[in-house]
Length: 144
Image 1 (cartoon, helix red, strand yellow):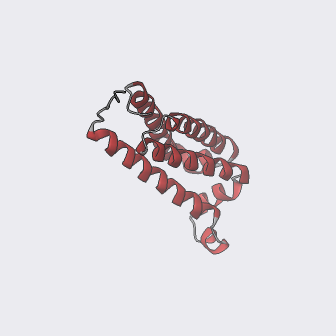
Image 2 (cartoon, one colour):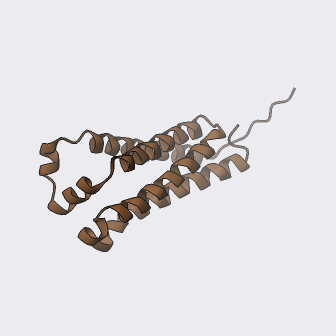
Image 3 (spheres, helix red, strand yellow):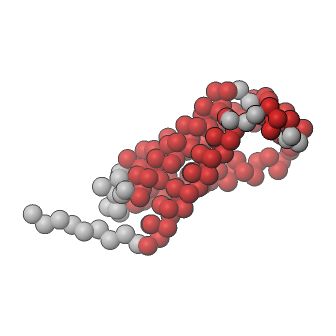
């Protein structure tokens, strides 16, 4: 039996590692959010505190799902597994739902204004980029 060896560019490994690091930062942000003490909340600027206080707990669950599936997707990419595509898609969908719900259910827009869009747009674009890259990697035979 002849095994086909598929060569992956160095950029594959760089993107996979950066994707993992990005998602691990997300995990850290999630853990800091859910472990926030009343003292830490009180030390926040008033606008940010109001947004945090208005955030329903189920939105934090979505945050956790988004970063967990993104992290597992990045690990799958590093392991060259096709299931990374599915995990990145789940992460992207949950990120979009989380971001839309954040603006719909909290006073983020009214308190912070257009600048409140910057980070959510970056997060959505990176999630979209990782999913798209994983799809292309799978199509090129880089994932098994």
